[in-house]
Image 1: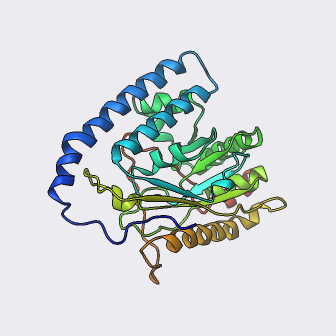
Image 2 (image 1 turned 135 degrees about the vertical axis):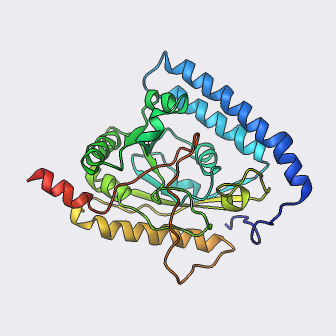
Image 3 (image 1 turned 120 degrees about the vertical axis):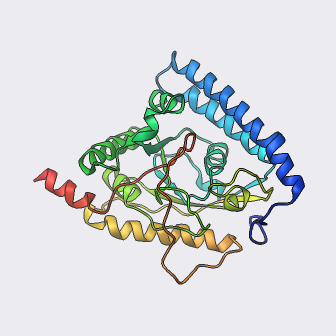
Length: 292
């Protein structure tokens, strides 16, 4: 089965009617929906610590957000979304990635997010109260402790989701992957599931505030088993994971894989963007030094 994807680049400028609809309906509706569901999740968090009801509220927010955007999401490889403990990994193109992921994955999961997001009003409170995993990328030793905690979450039976590029891409091309997903999966001895989003960059690229209605595809690849792997294979697994996600992305996108080095991801985290984070390439050495 083939996904339905944009036939070409996002128009610049957008047609007048799309700009009017975005400014007068879609953006205000997003704000109202986010405020409503965010307040509801915060209220529910006062009475539960597991985060399960809060996750259901986040899924409802995501479905409403996708509906407001007017896009149609097609999921390829849905049968691979079993919900078993694994690290689910996806490329990062747009603010709309988060609603698409939450509305498409049919099971409870937790995200790995920047520690700075946990300090923000409302969204930080939700992150902290709903059991999401915080990682401080500015402190390698703290990152190791956080990712070790994430591995324990996996072992306890809760799937984790992460954007391994460290931020949304400016160009729509994939950026280099960092090592967090491989580190967590090997530490927990659980699979990594590669996924790719196609179309969200054309729908709502970084720094844009208008929506271009296009179809979106989420394609799910075959899992990569990590049983028996050691930390010495973090680089190898990271490379394999990047190759698998890139293959899924460029197979279904109008774009062709560039020969030049991958684009540099943006490092700016904005309010409301549940960007996942990873660790720097020296974490393996830091982990080994800590053990000695």
